Length: 60
Image (cartoon, rainbow, N blue to C red; front, side, top):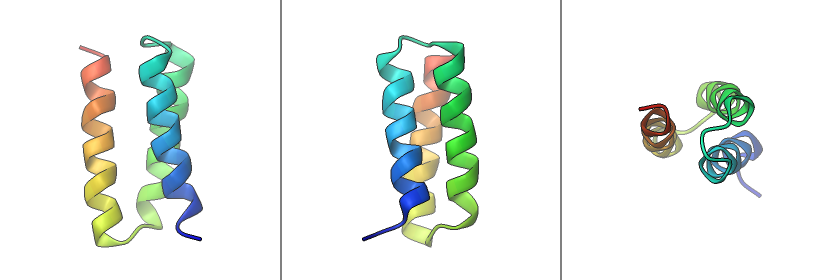
């Protein structure tokens, strides 16, 4: 089935992007990324870092 926290983090970042920088959506995405990172494989961590970069770009 895969890593559920990883899936949630990816979906949260997508929602934040769609919400046009909504503070609540960005905050939720940050929390999801943080939770997912600790329980992820090396490959998932690489993808999570890319998601973090996308999230960081929303705030600039």
